[in-house]
Image (cartoon, rainbow, N blue to C red; front, side, top):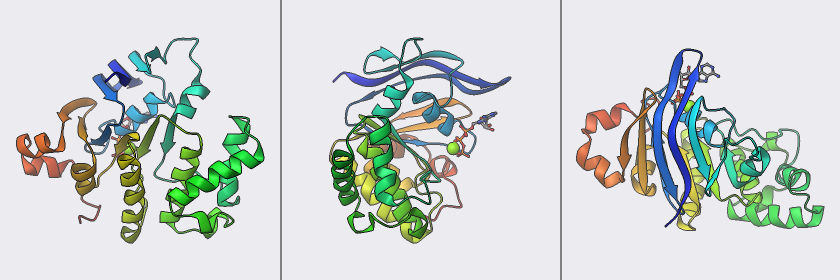
Length: 246
Ligand SMILES: Nc1ncnc2c1ncn2[C@@H]1O[C@H](COP(=O)(O)OP(=O)(O)OP(=O)(O)O)[C@@H](O)[C@H]1O
Ligand SMILES: [Mg+2]
């Protein structure tokens, strides 16, 4: 199967600090990749390089065969195709959920209000928030906000979804509702890269694990291979102890 993302010799430095060091991997259609690793290992920076929220210092990133670092590449087009969901939701708190989902469709994709609304409601339904469409974001729970953020990203009809610790800011009782939505997307074949400290989720839902340590990929394989080859203590040491284990 052709890869949808190819990362070659990616390096990112902040000043003299090497945060990503010769990163190489490819992502095929439908893969669900959990990116794990200790704090400061470069996980967020890697996701941010993929959709050019950070500019790599060197190396190449190909998305659907096109070099996204080439001067003529279209960053906005790229970001439409790679939806991103952040730990802190990044929704407009004073807008209602529906308008949060409609805004970029109208501005960026130039869709009509009625088409944008139709697509928004379809995606709100998918994340179980159809009945919250007219609620302002500040009236939602954390889990609902994160599901709204996922719906908003889906409205752009991305090829790939990037998640940076989507459940880390949530109260424990809301983690499952968000992971459930991500699991549903996985079962529908969505290609996803998910930075997570939720080990159960990584081992059970991801098709592949990438482990980052001090800017290098130190493991790339299936969850089964991870369990077989990595010492359990080391595996656990990459998981943030502050996150509740299920
Ligand atoms: N804008 C920046 N300027 C300078 N240094 C940065 C910047 N962003 C990140 N870093 C540094 O790069 C390193 C990797 O950060 P990154 O946020 O990618 O790690 P992470 O694996 O996502 O960690 P965490 O699990 O805590 O979220 C850290 O040492 C961090 O301090
Ligand atoms: Mg991070």
